[in-house]
Length: 126
Image 1: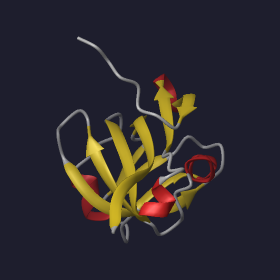
Image 2 (image 1 turned 30 degrees about the vertical axis):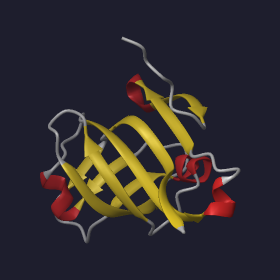
Image 3 (image 1 turned 120 degrees about the vertical axis):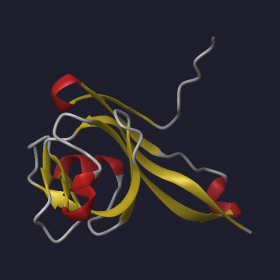
């Protein structure tokens, strides 16, 4: 049996560009792609924290160190500059791979500063 699991997440990154007249995709700072394990041209899901939009596109490599999140093409209708987004990639894993499975997660602070990384989602108690 295989399970679809969260592979990587960029949590609460800020959209820096929204370019309608573009072929498509989402450009992400190349350093963040490397840290998260998201590959260029890999399918990603984007969840817009500010307006509730959820959409699918693919990642392209942005300039390293740019702190760029550029939502391009038709997806630019779903996010504007300044919106906070969660970007996720998922993958299929076998039961054997799940024994040591841990997702890679990057957490962003204001101005798209990388706050910290983790491989576990913190539990928040009420």
